[in-house]
Image (cartoon, rainbow, N blue to C red; front, side, top):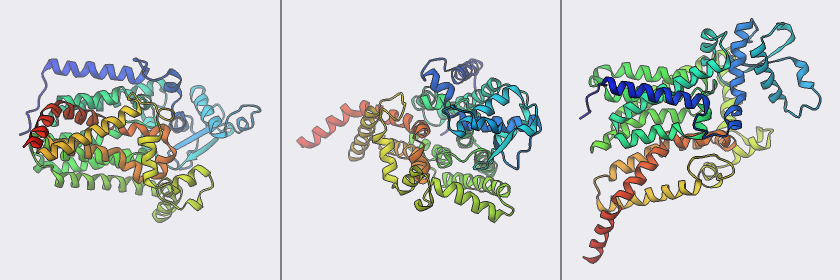
Length: 437
C-alpha cells in the first residue's frame, strides 16, 4: 500500500531550506568539495556554445539554422604564442564577447555546432538575453536543486528514508555532479526530470485512469532532454523506469514490469520526436538529416566503422569492446583519471560485498533477497547502459562520464552494502547451523 502524500508546514520549510542549501552549494562550491580551478573551468566549451546562442539572438547575429554556436573574431585564431588550440580560442572569445557585446556583427564569425539541437539554449535566449552568466548559472543550479529535492521527497515515499537520503547526498557531494549542476549546457535538471515524473506517476492513486497523461509528460520530458542534448539518454530512460521496478520490492511486492516497459516506450517516443526535429534542421529532408546525424554523430560515439575515423583516439574508441570500456570505469581509472568522493578500491570492495551478500541472501532465502538483488541490478544498469550503448563516447569522455555512477547506482551500492553488513551476523549463524546439521 502506498503511503498517503501531504506535507506539513514544517516539512515544507525543511524542503525549502534544503533546496536553498543545495542551490548555494551548486552555485558556489560552498563545501569546497571540488578544487576551485576545476569548479570554474570544467566543461566551459559546451557552456560557451549556449552563450553563443544567447548572444547571437541578443545581438542580431545569423545562427545559420544552428541551436548552439561559437562566436569569435577571425583574427584571434592567428594570435601569436597563445599556446591554445583553435577551439579553446573560440571558446574564450565567445565568453569575452558575451560579456562585452558584439559592436560590429560583420567583424565576427558565427560557427554552428550542429551535433545537438540546443533547445534549452533557445529557451535561455528567449528569457535571459540580457542576463549575466552568473544569473543564468544560478537559475540552472536552482532548477537542478529543485528537481533533486522533489525527487528525493518522492523516493522517500517510494523506497525508504535511508535510500532517499543516500540518493540526495550522493549527488549533492559528487564532484562531477557539483561541477555539472550549474553548467548551462549540461543543465542536469533535464537528466532527473523524467525520473521525477515517473516517481509522481508511481504515487498517483488514480494512475490507471491517468496513465496516458503521465506517459505523455514523461515523453515530453525526454523530448526536452533530447532536443537539448543527447548525452546519457539510456541512463535517463532506465532511471525513469527504475521506480516501478525497484520500489515495489521494498514492500515485498513484485516489480511492475509492465508499467516500466510503458515508460521505456514513452522515453523512446520522446527521443524520436526530438531526433526528427533535429533532423529537420540538419538536412533539406528528414532522410538527409537523419543520415547526417547517424554518420557524423551517432556512429562515431557508439559502434561505427573505426576505419572512417581520422583521430587516433576516436578510432581506438570504436575498436574497443564494451568490456574494455567497463574495465576503464571499474578498474583502470583510479586514482589518476577520475575524481570521486569514494576511492576506487573501496568502490570495488563494496561491489564485491554487495554481490556476496545478495548471493548469501538468495541461498538462505532471506526476506530482503529480492529487494537487494533488484535494487543493485537495476541501478547498476542505469550507468552501465551508457557505457555499453555509447561505447565510443564513454571510452573518450572519461573526464565527465564517471558522474553516471552517482545517478542511482552509488546510493544503491551503499544501501545494499549496509544491508549486507547488518544482516551478516544472522546469516553467518544460519550458515554455521547448516554446516553443523
